[in-house]
Amino acid sequence: DTVMTQSPDSLAVSLGERATINCKSSQNILYSSNDENYLAWYQQKPGQPPKLLIYWASTRASGVPDRFSGSGSGTDFTLTISSLQAEDVAVYYCHQYSDTSGTFGGGTKVEIK
Amino acid sequence: QVQLVQSGAEVKKPGSSVKVSCKASGGTFSSYAVSWVRQAPGQGLEWMGVIIPIFGPTNYAQRFRGRVTITTEEPTSTVYMELSSLRSEDSGVYYCAQIVGGIPYWGQGTVVTVSS
Image 1: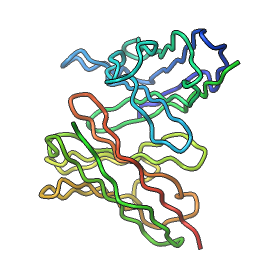
Image 2 (image 1 turned 135 degrees about the vertical axis):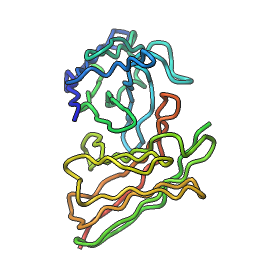
Image 3 (image 1 turned 120 degrees about the horizontal axis):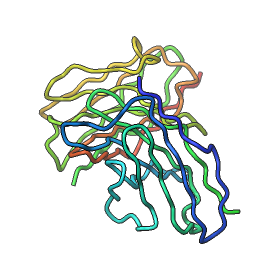
Image 4 (image 1 turned 90 degrees about the horizontal axis):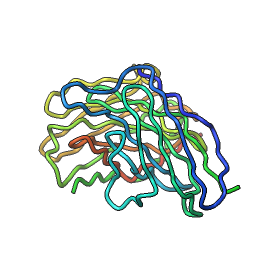
């Protein structure tokens, strides 16, 4: 199974500052058939289901503010929050998916410093 | 717009089984993989298994193999996840998710409580 290693486990950032979360896959998740990385990022707040932020590693989901961006390819991926807002306090997960399997990173808790 | 609606909360005894449903609408149900994901209280997301309705064969995560069964009922666009030999550690929220055109869509989650 593909292992997703997410770092850091937690992160405290001042309001308006940048937050960066990393995710490393144990296998290449770039699909040559369509040149897409099947990698998503989610935000989860207490008592709520995960909310899709990014799919295909760098495409923002509908309605997601542009302060959220995803980058990377192959095995190394990054979620960046360019200017942290109070409502961004949450746990963030990366997720690699395919038709035959899926695995998640362990999560990163983002707090206000 | 793809929508996934799951069945309601369940309370089960240890050793019993639970069957959770996930009904899809708004998309081409049969062609896209549907996965099940578990989240234990205060823990992260854990992938359990997947089915592609049109093909039938499933793939299960190693730790659930032998206890989990994912099936599909195409006429109603519904996928089921059954987990057997329940123990207290199986308590949590169970989600279905379908990847359509590279975009993951999630159900609202089903709370399963295993308690004697």
